[in-house]
Image 1 (spheres, helix red, strand yellow):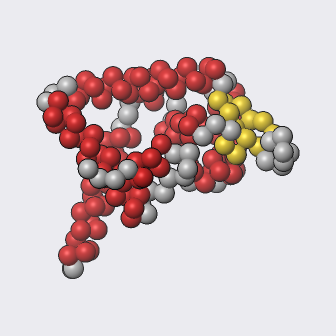
Image 2 (spheres, one colour):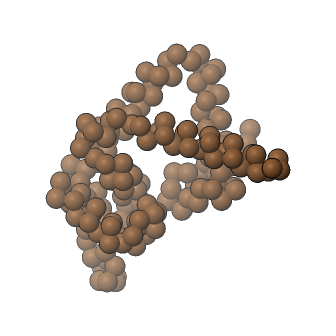
Length: 163
């Protein structure tokens, strides 16, 4: 095995561990959301008026699967679909007031849980953790592992230069 192969395998293990740590978010049960529903909601609320096709591409699921998912979220009054005024064939997805409240509560709960874990770190370690996560994201964007669109909050990180 070459050094590059070993590095790639190590990155794969690290990505897997990080993904598992992030997706073990037990807050979703409290809101009655699946992980995919939560990811979709975050995308709808950060990309106001996103089209169904863009949303399918962003979340990495088929349009048929997204249609079923959005129907479920609509029934819960978390999102709404509207035909695009300029092109009636395009359907855009928007958040609702109820959905905004759910997202706000969910985000606050996650922030509180993160804070409860990071309080064990010194202020310098907390700053270092934030810095290193931002730098890791910047490098993953540069490598093409993450491909944020212009509306993604990650697109700003990719533009930031390392300090």
